[in-house]
Length: 364
Image: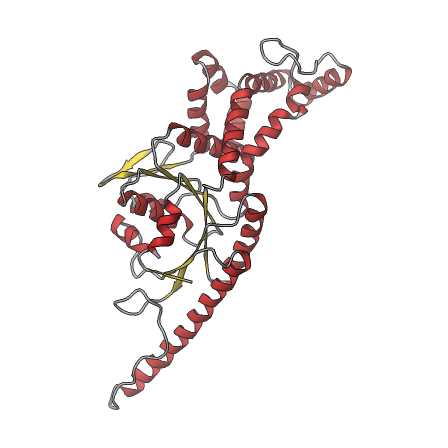
């Protein structure tokens, strides 16, 4: 178990993906905590957090600011907040005068708060920022469930395409100080489009839309460079992907669809982690196996027999679940490590409980 986990954590970036409701965010935090306790400076950057994660890390809350976890000097955490993260991004990349213009632009304000894709774009930018600074030996990226995870991973490539495509060229006037090659709005098609847009949205909104595109054009080269760098990192063989799932039929079906697309677009997962996969033997981390010893006959014999039958049923059920997990892994890569994590007997609300989570795991 420790060999597989330590090999995964001996990287610069580990991306956790999986269906919703399978303990993915908690698993990401547990991986980062394990690395931190081995002396690595680890950051868990969560895109889709649960409040209880902040509780488990001993923090009052999580936001875009990277915070060191109390009593764990090597462990830090941050949560993506779309609007705050975009504003922080503009603070990093724009000059002071341009920054105020950008933050005051109503199209930017709407884009940074409401558009679905904007969440994915700023997540990619935030990931680039923490990797580029180099303050952490390991970044564990906790992605949203299933399809949303793919949007995050595809965002750098999509943003680069958007900035390279003709969308900006259509809307912007030629300007030697920005992009001299942009198509002129003086063209008949451009004038007609802008006139129609002005009637539909109003001249003031149209002007702010053009202003927003000009702002994008001003930052185009920087956006392109960062997007291409992040896309290359996500495709780098040195980046690890941990697929987190449970052994339920529904979760495995969702995980299969995600893993298939992940393998097609990026790479087969480096680790398969199946949460709440079994009940452990009392006092041990191994799964229940077979029936318990029969007790001597007496008044408690009927109750003991019922418990024996129940235990055998649970053992059979979880054995079938672990076999399903093994078949799932084998369908992608029979050589890939896979771990089954036991049902936790405690609520994961403290660092100590979080630290024990991965200790209750067995190879699949």
